[in-house]
Image 1 (cartoon, rainbow, N blue to C red):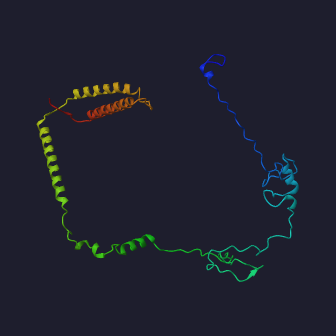
Image 2 (image 1 turned 30 degrees about the horizontal axis):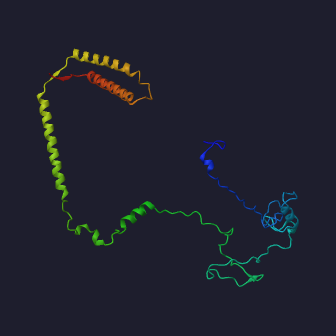
Image 3 (image 1 turned 180 degrees about the vertical axis):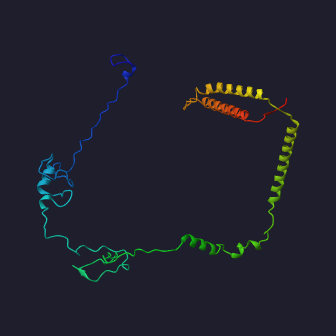
Length: 274
């Protein structure tokens, strides 16, 4: 950018002369030393506060304080107190509900008395010791039996007089037919399974093979149990795979225990012939 000491074409353009006219200072038309109208700050006590207006208020007491008359004029007259019947009677919304009394004291009508029930006397005692032998369960049952039906028209409650009374609903034959078809299919499947079982020949396992099978199952159980003991004490698992692995080992151990118990029972053991 070109400074004022350097030559520039912009220096040839005449610069506008802006003169800012300031507004005259605001001066209130009220006296600033006059007492503050309506203010109650600094009226109590003898401490002199800043401002001539507050000090003048303390001398003249033109404005009352927060509550009651001016401190210099607040001397109460003990003989002037509120007497009974001097308070004006409140206006009633409906004069027909509570008629005003004719007798009045100090020229004002009194509010009628006995708006609330009187306080019970010391001789009024509640009735005590009342007992009943009524059986409410039996009474409710009898009332339920003998009560009339809640139908609007009694003729509508007589189902015997209806046209479709005693007739088989249209959907029942269809349901029975479907049940019979399913039963035939189940019977056919059972017959085929029984026929296949009769064709299979079984042979009895000798004692030596039985004992060898039990020993091999026990060795397998020991091997699986040694792996299971490494994770059986864990309560919190890091992944879902650890939980499934533990459940699978428990199921395998339970299956081996059931097989060993079945083979250890007395009596012959039959196996299918190959």
